[in-house]
Length: 219
Image (cartoon, rainbow, N blue to C red; front, side, top):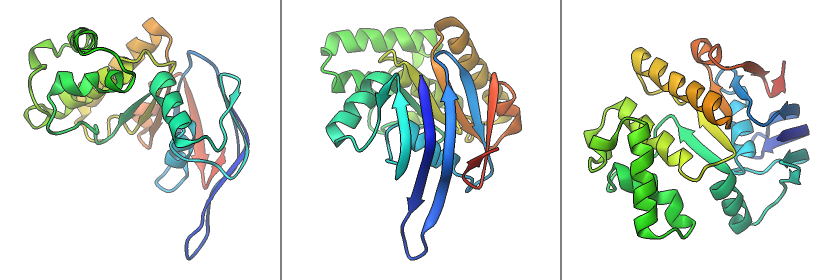
């Protein structure tokens, strides 16, 4: 599903920073993998390239056989909105929208009717044990509840791939275990490809394969 061949990325500033140095990587459909590395190792840059949030300088990236390279913003947004679900450490919920409105948002961008997106969002909140919290705003939710809302939002478009950037980074240890179990169950039941970036060995060990990155190179 994901194929990277000799992918390089440099950030050009006062001092050019060669972040990814010839990355070769294959991830099959339905895999549950983690990308693990210290801060500054290049793991978040790699995730951003996989998620079509950032471009690479040279090499090859294909997603489901389609080359991803220098896409227009509208084309990149279309791929992201239909193929990829994102989960972030900081949840990235919109503070002035309640839980169900946050979950509905990706369907709004797909042009789904208000009634249908509301019904689907309620179904996903119920699946994640949050039906009774649908009308609550992010500041009224615990960290674990916010991350469940974010997971529901990532799932509602039925993506082929979920990319999670430190999904347990802002959670206590008990809630982290619950969120990881939820992601594991989703992978087992729905076979959605999941790539989880983490620096936490305990999180990485719960995935089926650990990809270790150090100084921009996969070890």
